[in-house]
Image (cartoon, rainbow, N blue to C red; front, side):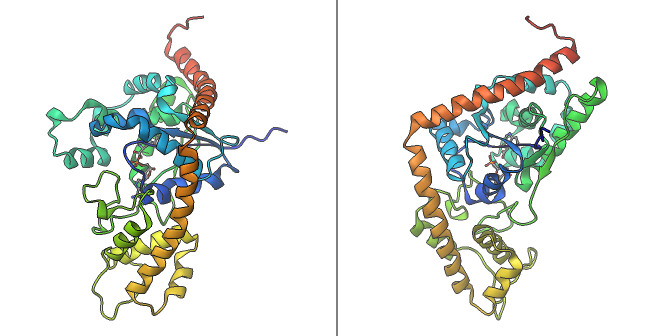
Length: 339
Ligand code: AMP
Ligand code: TRP
């Protein structure tokens, strides 16, 4: 009997250096998930075009991101790894889904509002792709009849929108699309900034001390953690409370993800120690984790012909799958096929 595994799709934009938030929120889960799901891991280079600052080093960022996928344990023999722009079906489904999306629902997207504010852009100089961004994401997901989408909490709304678009299409044309579920963990799905633990740690933060980049050297990491915001509770006590202790809770989530220990276990081990000690333990664990990851990353990154071979083979495999879905959609819509 053939036993089909559920389909998993995830992606990261190659828009600058990857952060510890990206790793903890999504990439750390990928390696283990390969055993239980049929996985597709995409490098969302078309999404990265929405941010104009990327244009000078996009090529580098794409290969950097691919190397990190491999360093995080994504295995091309188990999963499909590909670059979004290599599979034209994404752009084509994007257009079709535009015809089934509403302006008002896109206008509600929190990420769009945040990105517009960060850029202090008025609607006049906000590019249309930034607005349509979640529709391309819906196309990515729906092309493969995806069941689950592991993402950080900031992307939950986009997966919900994807479900709405799919539902709308299905109600007109039958069961064409599988409805995807977001896969979001209780802890680690929104790693916060080190100095401002009420906002998300983000690649594009102008204050680099807010962010741990996966390629930061160890002395930089030590300094960033040392300066991370905690609180002035006296006597100082380590416990998890996102409202009263956002800084400490964020550091606990980071430590828990890196050590793979749950927060209750950690709290017992950390009982009675000072914040400075706590931070030393985090630096220690992060150093070990990052040096191993960076070493593996460098090995892959130096071999561009291998990276391109992986991307080429991944593109061929995803094209086969996505053509099938797209052909079905064309038939349903009444488009005439070439052959
Ligand atoms: P992006 O950097 O926006 O391309 O995000 C890639 C993936 O990382 C998405 O699934 C995000 O939800 C996730 N992610 C980004 N930043 C964080 C963060 N600070 N905490 C947890 N997940 C994150
Ligand atoms: N929009 C996601 C982000 O900014 C990246 C992404 C693009 C994605 N397509 C996707 C994530 C499909 C999950 C599934 O983080």
